[in-house]
Length: 134
Image (cartoon, rainbow, N blue to C red):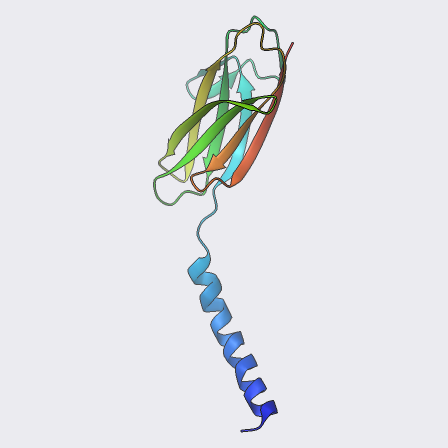
């Protein structure tokens, strides 16, 4: 077989096998469809949602609605004050549309920029929530 014939055969085989490889690697991707920082969560609904809170707030909640899970998995809420990791909370996701939340006690002196990174169990960043303590 000539070089051109071998190359043509390889191109055809690649075209036939590529969909199989992509299908085998594709897994459902978790998505954050709703996210908020709030002063409370009642009946799985965030209340007092904002991106600015007084230093006297006492406690805040990171609420997330996760879509796309086809089997039980985990997400993580990573609470950062500036660049310092203050808390890591693992949360189970048990259905295709799952609401969950974590909370963090806020000391009055912890003013400034905060964020909560939401990651999957492999550490892939799904969402970041930014907020300020005044």
